[in-house]
Image 1: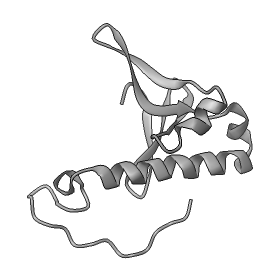
Image 2: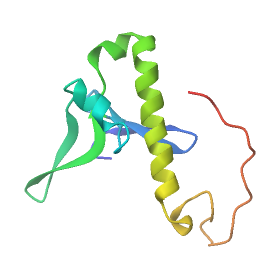
Image 3: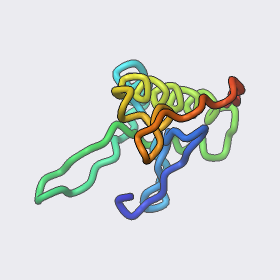
Image 4: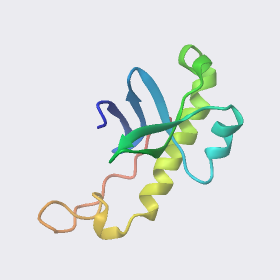
Length: 113
């Protein structure tokens, strides 16, 4: 992915690493907290223009301080959850498998981040 790696939790990508830089997922509900810290969005060249994704750079101090990273990671995972809910049911992998048949529901267990 753009020469980088996706970071997933429970099947949802909530962060990417590109050129040794960690970016966390954002949406309209959490982007302000990243902008307030003057963190840059992830951008890349696309057809001669600059494009961006809803991922913002993680704060430098968060890379060495779990107590700083945890709220940001939770916020990013929440954005990934909200994005998954917005997808149409037929596009979500938790509804259909590759044959188009409905999949059995996953157990009700979830992990806290």
